[in-house]
Image (cartoon, rainbow, N blue to C red; front, side):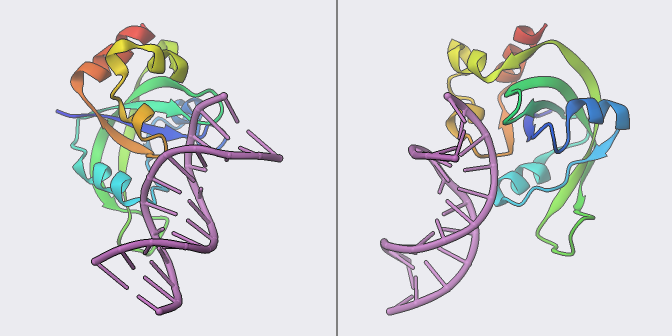
Length: 134
DNA sequence: GCCAACGTTGGC
DNA sequence: GCCAACGTTGGC
C-alpha cells in the first residue's frame, strides 16, 4: 500500500468537480517523473488531492480504482492515466503554509520539489496531513 | 505579473 | 555527452 499526492489547478479540475463526477481518469501528466509515479500506483492506494495556484491546500482523499493505462487524450504512448474515486473531503483543508510550518513535513516532495505534479508520500506524511485536516 | 526552480531541447 | 537556451510550473 502506497500513498500519493496529486496536484490540480482548481479552475482546471477541482475537488468539487471530482465529487460531482464521482470518478475520473487522471490525465494531463506530461512529466516523466510524475508519469513514473502514476505507473507505480496500485489499486487501493490512497491519494491526497491538492489544489495548486488557487487555494494551495490539500482538500481531500482519493483512491486508485484502476491502475495505469494509455492516456486516452493523446496518441503518444509515453503518457498514462489512472482512475480515481473520491474517498473523503477533509474537514479542514491543509494549507501549504501549514505544511511548510510543520516539523514532521519538512521533507515532503510538495515543498522540496515544488513543480512535481504527482509525488509519493511516506505513510507518516500522509497520516500527518490527514490528522491536520481532521 | 514576476521570478525562481527545474525539466527539456538542441547545437556543438 | 555537455551545457546554454528556452519553456513551464507554481508560489508570492
